[in-house]
Length: 466
Image (cartoon, rainbow, N blue to C red):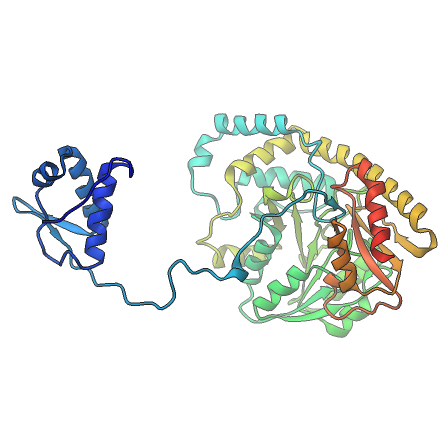
């Protein structure tokens, strides 16, 4: 007879019965095929209701600890004992522990952070409610491979109007982030490719392509962006560039260089250009510059963009526009995939664009970001004087400054943390060691910072190098 020692203050009685019997079984104190007391017998023994014991036995049967035989009762299943492990199950390495980020006292000049204080939440939620009212069947359906066609049609119209991108909605692929879409794109090439990446540029792209065993080559920059001489010297199979606002230098590629690169791509049918148009919505003092894809008449450009830079990072909606030949491959290779973006957010975004809220918000934020940008540059010039050079490109959400100083990049980053100033330096975005030459280059993001914080941010920046 098993002894349960039930206690009223230890939670639900049926759970106590279940846990005690399970422990007996796993410890080997109840043997395989051994018969358990009947429900009535155990209920009388422990002074509990029949339903309480029945619930405990039912859970044990469901999990496979016991089994029943009709008119015979309940028996212990044959379960192999756990093999002995020296390391405790509760062991967890300290270096894998994570700390919650504390923003207290910090000021952000990060290029990754946005200003959400003006976001039209009510409009967004209203569109979301409309999706539940009018698109419920779409929310219940298995997501389409490339995302809902209706949403892609909306985005195609927007891209044509804003960026001159020429495509059918069917050429658009939606996904939860540019990195994920790049991974799916490179899966279309079974053979390893030579990939040309701008330097400085996105280190995450470098890591992604290396992880897929492609050969990475560095494309140097000149005053027009990606150097055509560097491109011709390397002749990569796939060239990844940011022509509308080079990241992180901010260089805007002129049409002459764009045509040179398109002509280079035409020299081989196996060459493709990936145009990462990550924040082209924000231009100051000029109109939007047409995309490289808008000049491409030979389907050699793969256009990529994201809503994470204009709306909010957590929305995780990016897109790519595939040339027809790559679209055929994509549908063949990824026929078993489902769109990784949230369907509710996609339809909400579609309504947000169609009702004019998206462009209205972009226009408002362009105005606000430009004020922050100008105020920050004025304050930097006032405090630093001839000690800095500001590379002001009227676009995006960041610019670069060169500071005359002999401290190292490593020391600068360490002191920035001490002064609770969030920012990045150019060294993080170089694929090779960066030469200092008595100066360091710092990326100054101005989207997240509030106007009243700018003076304090610049004073902290000055203190870092003193």
